[in-house]
Image (cartoon, rainbow, N blue to C red; front, top):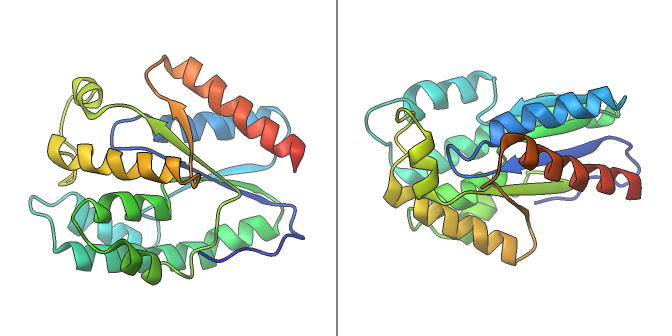
Length: 204
């Protein structure tokens, strides 16, 4: 990943987690909290709401069969470049706090769970900018599947999610992600994330 110029006043934060971990809820709550505290914060997500992102949701995530993982990885990387150029970088330059629901770490965790070479995944994502802060909400897959009422995508199987979680925990160990225990109430998890983010903003 490439570094953004350090002169900017905008901040780029991403929230990660396996499917059903509560990351989308927490990303929205974080944006709401930051706005209450007078920060100019926006929510965004991957796959993006652009043409490629919509195609990924419709034809890859919501289909009954999973496309070849290499194809999947390339489409996610392409959508990410489009997302960065058309929304993320523009928002950062406008001095906003961008909270992204999933980012490049999802590609490493998910496509990496299909035994695709991690170096290759990093290479096709080399134009992705590095977040200022990346948070991972950790919830064991067996807990997630008790929470979920229905299966939402081709990647939501216990076998895949266990491998994905292992990849996320490796990224935590390598200090790419800061881990938050997701085995608490929504409000407790939200407060933990809020404290991490506010400490970061005060420091930077």
